[in-house]
Length: 355
Ligand SMILES: Nc1ncnc2c1ncn2[C@@H]1O[C@H](COP(=O)(O)OP(=O)(O)OP(=O)(O)O)[C@@H](O)[C@H]1O
Image 1 (cartoon, helix red, strand yellow):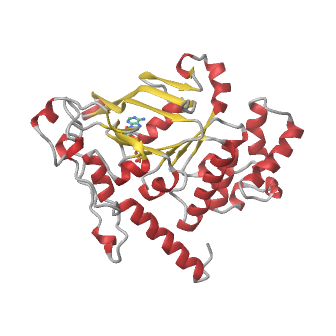
Image 2: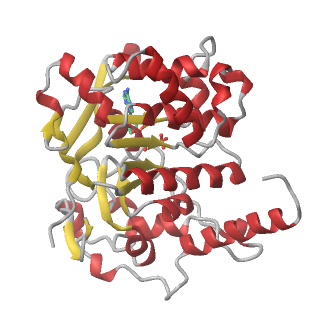
Image 3: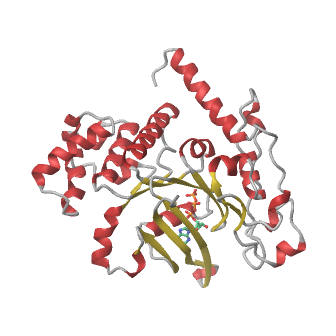
C-alpha cells in the first residue's frame, strides 16, 4: 500500500526574533519563537498544534503562510519549496494555502458586502470572472450553511458563528489544498463552536482538504484532529495520532498539559492543575523542559533530546519517554472532558435551550 501524498512538508523551520530590552532598549535579545520544527500533513489529514501560550503555534502558522519570513528551514506545499519562489509566484501559490483566524470580524472589511469579499479572491487569483464569481459565491454560502441572499449583507449584520462561517467560505473560495485554522473556534459560544467544528469536519470529508488546526483547547483538538504535535518553547516535543498522544503521552510536558485540563467529574472544575510558570530557564543547552520536569536527570540538563520514535507514527523528545507514567486505562482527562461537554450540550438541547 502506498502512503497518502503529503500536502505540507516542513523541515527544520526556525524563526528568531530580535527583541529590544533594558534601559533605552539597548540590549538586543534573540528569541527563537520557532526552533527547528519539522512536521508533515498528509492529503485529507488534520494536524493539531497545541501548547501553552507563547509556545510558538501562531508564529508557526504565520511562517507557513509566509506572512513572516523564516530565519531558516523549508516549507513544501505539494512538493514545491515555497522559500525559493519569487514574490509574484508566491502570491499565486498562496491560494493553495489559506488561513482562518480567531476573530473573523477583524479579517472582514466592515464597509464591503459579504458577496464582494467572497468574490474578490476568486477574481484576484484569476479563477473566474465577475459573473461566474457571483454564482460561485452563492454556492459557497450554501456550502457553509448560509443563505445565498446573505451575499448582499455586511459583516455587522451577522452573529459571531455566522461570521466564522463566512471566514471559512472565504478560505475555501480559492479551493486551497491546505487551511491553517488558528484558534478558529476559541471565541465562539460552546454550542456555536460545536456547529462550526461539524462544518469543518464535513468540509474536510467532502473535499479531502488538509488542515493545520491550532488550539489551546485540548478537548476540541481531540474531537477534530487526526494527529497532534505538542509544542513547548518553540519546539515539537511530542507528535503522533491524537488518541495515542492524549491517551498514552510519552513526554512529561504533554502529561502535564493534559492534567491541567478541567476534569469531567462533578465538582472537578476547581481540581484542574495550574501549570507552573515558565521561568525562561532551559534556553541554553539541554532539554528546554528540564527546569519543570519531574523526571529530570543531569543528562537532560546537558543534552537536548531529539524527537525520536516511541511507537508507530509516535515520537517524543524525551530521554525518559518510556518512564512517563501512563494514565489509568480509559481515564485520560481529554476524552473524559470532551464527553462531559457533549453531555452538557445534549442536556441543554433536551431542556429546549437555543443552540
Ligand atoms: N513579532 C514578534 N517579535 C518578538 N517576539 C515575538 C513576536 N511574535 C512572537 N514573539 C514571541 O515568540 C514566542 C512565541 O509566540 P507565539 O505567538 O507564536 O506563541 P503561541 O503559542 O501562538 O501563543 P498564544 O497561544 O498566546 O497565541 C513568544 O515568546 C512571543 O513573545
